[in-house]
Image (cartoon, rainbow, N blue to C red; front, side, top):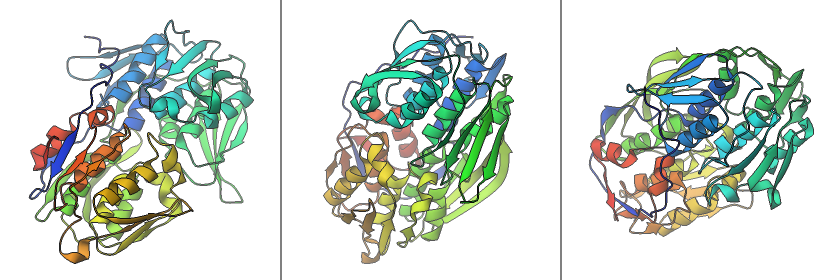
Length: 458
């Protein structure tokens, strides 16, 4: 068995890319493993007793930063010659104080969840990230963790670099989320693992529940209760005995969205996407696309380690504009940029409501999407209520004009979304930097070109 590198080399070189109109998108593929599940499998494997075996781990830069952090915290995380990852955990409460700064790269998920995990240990850790991550707000995580007894020293707004002073005597809390956030919920639940009692997170809108499902898979007691006001209370019982498990990571539905939308936009296309995670709290994009008239068949539905999975057969479709309700945002928060690309090519107007959370992702995605669409000749408005209205060109017999260079602000999903749009525009679309695509979707360009795309250096 060989140990994987602590992390890939940091992204330093700008990589402009250009996408041109293409013919049909055809093939059968499996996109890389789910990023959310990959992060969590490494973290929980590190605090479990025994060995956790992970098949299909996403080996993008974000997840490799998590693997490196878990090694610095005392766990073993190795990749064998067959591509299977094996994590030898230290047990709950036994993470070691790292001798180095924990570099989370571009990953807000890794940073926020790991802050919660180490908060329940009597150790001090310093977190940092790349230029993009260091701009993102962390106070939404540090506030409840401080209520539990951890301490934080960081820049204004709780931004990285940030020092976490954990405690082995955290107190359990009941915390109502002010905004729908699976990352904040997960950080609190992970901190609650090492408390003597029950920690509860109350969410008005259900967010992705990968943490709860995986905690149960490792042996923790996690309950959910619907409250009188309709909110959902998620409770973890502290000090469980977590045991190493085998995990099969499904293909990431967020990554599958890019080839799926490309196939919907190109006449004659038929694409089979294998093993895609179909957690109902992650499928908002696919629900929306079906409402728009997308021909998507969900075949061979099954479960893998508690997560629902299906094969998606996607065929070219004439899409029509719809209104996307605000309460759908938690189930598709990462997919709005590629939905906007689909909406630009649809007939009629698409209105997306409740997009405030897009402003605090890897970039201000709401502003970046609107600006990019306008550069490509698409009529678009951003509402004072953080809504996005896209006037599609599908009824005109031709796609958007394109012929622009779109700014990505170091955001991988902005880059991939506009490269997909460029496959359906009259003139090619370029992005100023596609280097950060590897943080979540290594091999994206080669995979898309293998299906019939025309993506190359700008």
